[in-house]
Length: 92
Image (cartoon, rainbow, N blue to C red; front, top):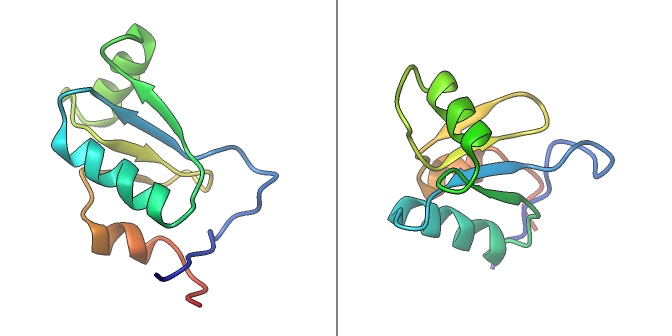
């Protein structure tokens, strides 16, 4: 298994992953983060109206999930494993 080191320090805010319970891509993204030991905050937009509004706003009217917000301000929407891996450096 490859280990990934984030491009940002632990002192910075956590990665936020906006998800739903029915989303297969959300399950894949969570599994990818868990497998690589990367901490994140999972926010269910079905249970959090403000989070749902945020996701809709940043996705131009769509409730696209997963929407992953990184401490450096970048956002990935419905990323695949390669796109997730490209966000991290320091392969062991």
